[in-house]
Image (cartoon, rainbow, N blue to C red; front, side):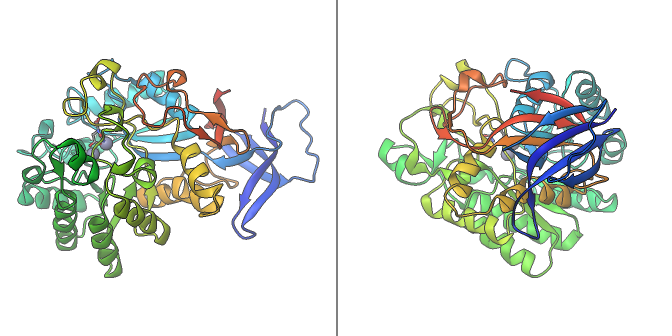
Length: 427
Ligand SMILES: NC(=O)N[C@@H](CC(=O)O)C(=O)O
Ligand SMILES: [Zn+2]
Ligand SMILES: [Zn+2]
């Protein structure tokens, strides 16, 4: 039996507009895409009517925190993948800053097994660069790759020692694996919760300077040049980082980069109070930085959008700006935020946004997903582009309700998500 998604609107890249199509799915693959004016014979097959809705390749999020093992009170694989599906994501890559840290083949296998038995979207695990993410000793890259790790990162902290990072890059390059870096020089941060800027000044807080991120970006670009490794920069938030990555790409260094919706939309000047739902790492930067990351994404310096979905409990976030952990949830607001802020306003085409959330992550990480075409995996997202709805954190499928976007009125809400040809979430 096939599954037909009928009458949906698909973004046509050549015509740069939405066109009506029918999608036929069989055996977990997209089998055919038929003209919307045809009437396919759907007798004996399942159908989903997508009239008036966008049908897109499923979104891909290459930077998320599922918190399992160890922090299941914040999120687990079951809740995190359901939250992802509700946000229209069909493939997600999870970070290793769990407890224990994902630094052994056993933990990689645990994640993959759990994702298979309890998850509803595809989960790709990263492994740590250093044991316990302590920056002292490299993990067993070969065994981790063999177990299914897709790259190496100590996300949550920066690798402080340059020689350690260089050794990691050399080794990763020798096995064709990428190094993904959380860029932060601890000596320049010293416990600051927000960026240097107007909010910090107003509240008499210590702020993190932009260089704390960009110094690592610059260092690692040079190390990538020296080792040849594919170096991917996490959650770029500063003008200086964008500038360094742009220059590195211009001379052919093997660097790619990501940016989060919140860094594209919010600056430190938007933070209304000492509310820790506005606290994340990197922090919200100045309006000038926001402009720079927007331009970076637009000109391809920044390749992809990721959520950095980072759920925490309400109790943890209630500790206040200085003491609460860094991070905000991302899955269930990402697409509506970007669609409303950049596509509805006419700044970007819908095609541009979709590309940065589907094809580009697939290109950067060499995935078969991310395409809406015959022969591609049947991972699809159906989206209502019209209705305006309010962000209601209490309705999130994520255990984390920590978001600064509560109450925002947005368009572009996913209504159904299909993974490997199966409906895994619908309204
Ligand atoms: N981004 C965050 O603010 N927090 C992340 C860690 C990280 O991505 O660096 C987390 O694990 O909570
Ligand atoms: Zn990080
Ligand atoms: Zn992260």
